[in-house]
Length: 472
Image (cartoon, rainbow, N blue to C red):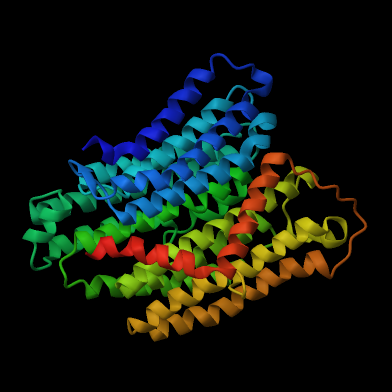
C-alpha cells in the first residue's frame, strides 16, 4: 500500500519545493525564507503525525511502517525542525550560493533515516543507510573556506566509506549463510548460527558501530564535532545515531534467531568501554564542542545498556532516552553556536563570568548540563534511571552499576562548565548574538527537557507503545 510511504512523500515534497524555490527567491534573503518555510512545513508534518497514525501497520514490499518506525520518524522530524531553526542565521550569513543545498541535503538525510528504520530487506537497508550518510559528509564540510572543514569532511567521508564497505561485506556473508536478504525469511530459515552467519553479523554490527560512534569506532567524532558548523552538529549528534540504533534493534530482533545471547554480550562489552572511554577522554578537554563529542560517546554507552537488555523494557527505554537526549544535546550545541556567534570561539575558558553577562543563556545551559548529567528533575534524569533499570531487570546489574559510577565522573566535567559560567569572573564584554530562529530552537529544547522532566509518564507510555511492535 502506497500509504505506508506517506511520511517519506512529505519529506520528498519539502526537498522538491526547496529545489524549485531556489530558482526564484532573491539571494540576499533565500536562506531565511527557505529556513522558516521548511521549519513550518516540518512542524506541520509533526502535527500530521496524529493523522499518519492511521497508516501504521501498512507496508509496501520490504518497507513496513510499524509503531517503532513511526516513533523514530517523529524524532527525525523533530530533530530536523530544531536543527533547521537553529541553522537559519548560519545559512543566511555564512553560506553563499549554497543556501538551498544545505536544507536539501539535510532533508535528504532525514529521508534516508526514515526509510532505514522501516526497511525489512538488507538491500533496501544498505541503500537507505547510504542515503542517510552521504549528505552528512557534504554538510560537515559545507564551510569549505574554513580552516578545519576540508579535513573534517575528508575524515568523516573516509571513515564512512570504510564502514559502508564493512557493512556490505557483512551483509554478503549473512546472505551466503542464509540464502536471503529479507529479514523475515532469514529469521524463519536460520535456526542455528553458523560461523559464517556470526562473522557477517559482527562485521555488520562493526560498520554500524562507526555510524553511531561507539567504542572502538569513535575516533572520527570529536574532530567532526569540532570542525563542522555547530547548528549542523546539533542535528548530527542525535538523528543519525537514533537511526543507527533503530537499525541495530531491527537486526537483533528481526534477523537473529532467538538464541542471541552471545551477540548481546558483545553489546555489553561495547557499552562498558564506550561509557569508560567517552567519560575519561572528556575530562581533559578545553573546547566545549570536543567535550560534548566525547560526552556523546559516553551517552551511546548508556543507551547500549538498554540494547543489551534485549527486552521490551530495554527497547522502550532506549526510545525514551533518545527523545530526552535530543532536547539536551541539541540544546548544548545550539548554546555553542550562540557562543561562537558572539565571541568567535567555543573554548570552555571563554565562558567565564557568563552568568553575570547573559543570565538567561547561562541558566538555559545549566538546565541542559543537568539533563546531560542525569540530575533530577529534568528529562535526562529519567532517561538514565529508566535505561539502567531496564539493564538491572535483564540481569545486567553490573553494567548499570558501571554506568552509574561513570555518570558521577561525567558530572565533574559538566559542572566544570557550570563553574566557569557561575563562579569564575571575567572582564571581557559579552553581548549575546542570538537570532530569532536560534532562540526559538533553544526555547524548544529547554521546554522539552523541563516538560518531560516533570511529566515523564507521557514519554514513558509512548516509548512502550513504540517498543511493543518490534517484539510482537
